[in-house]
Length: 186
Image 1: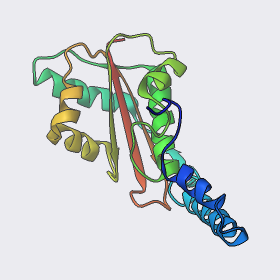
Image 2: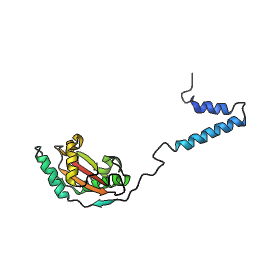
Image 3: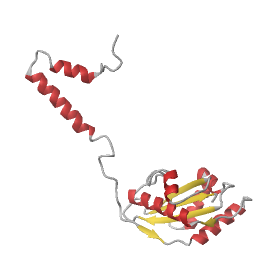
Image 4: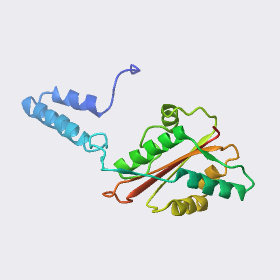
């Protein structure tokens, strides 16, 4: 019966072979194998490569017009209006900038959604986030979110009362423009 903490994998077998009667040649071969393995291990993860840190520019939006457009859309579905919330604008701005600097869209680019909301001072019970990249105008990004089932569902959450929206541009990136919309119950 083997001991529960004893390794029987290839590393143990290689070490055993290096200790055998072959002397220095086997030991050198084993050392080279270990060095090559360690060198190749560095090629496998993105943690070794720095994340892009693209130059970005925040875009001044008319948040009140965005809230009015989202409110009209919600009213057409029998739902109440939304208003602008400064803490949600901060959270949306942070996320749009994180995505723009990274050069891609990810809900995790700026940390977890819950952690970002907490940092921004959010105190509500319900929250959702819509991201987009590439759209030139708010009307264009709104249309994209409306035709996407998941994004549309977020905008039509009955509990939603407040929003924060932001756009950050990264001219050197593939998509150029990065949007974030955070919706909450307050």
